[in-house]
Image 1 (cartoon, protein in one colour):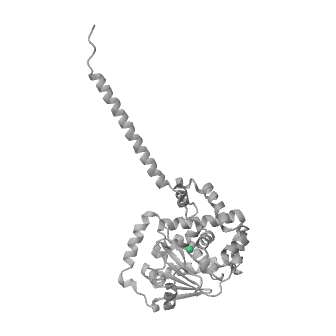
Image 2 (spheres, helix red, strand yellow):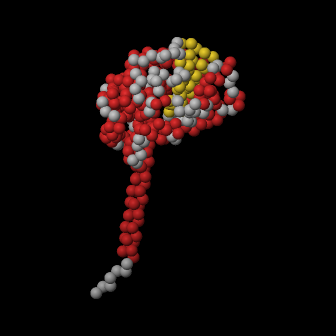
Image 3 (cartoon, protein in one colour):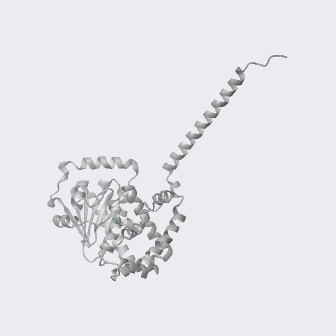
Length: 329
Ligand SMILES: [Zn+2]
């Protein structure tokens, strides 16, 4: 099984990845944990080290340290599958293998380093395989339900269409974040800042998201979710299910989009740019941390100017006081 996984992993570009987003102070902690867990004693795992839980259509593979998460993960996959199968009118064509990785080393071994460092999960819809960083590794158990739902959407949609590799990344990531109700990307702070600096990424460039640095990747994920939100707000959720049905029927993405929404993707993207300006222009103010620093800087400048003004007045007063008095006439 592992040999098979490693061979599929060698073929890059097939994967759909989830972003790991942790508050800034946690990044250092996470990096520290990675360094600890990448030590040789935990680096190598034999095939016999993996245990399995069968919960059709899911098969969960885990190592001893992650046993505590398996019950929750199994139940999350089952619940999400029931929900999405009904919503999207899709069914899995066969079993899905889920691997839970307790360390970066194991994650990198299984993914063949295909995922960028900010990825917390990866899915291959063709082989119906999902590889997740365990909550013990991400130190973020709260996000586990979103992660499970996100990767399941990738597999469910990707395995149902004839050309999963042709699906645009904005669609893959946008619909996965939308259906997983991932509020992490919803406020659109990165979009708001990008509007100010005129650096919105065009939708077709989001295809290169795996090469992006974390901050740009975050913007790409926010934009993908925002475009899907825009489509649902303007054309209804039925537009999305119609798009998926058209894709399952074998149409190219461009044709499927036009059939589902009644206009081509470029027209929709233009309208979305206006929507971005309306919806997100001032959202960067929500980023209190940045706003606070600007405020402190302004306050510092004001105090500096006030002190200079006061000093000038004092000097002037002293000059006047020292000037000799006019002689009596
Ligand atoms: Zn994803």
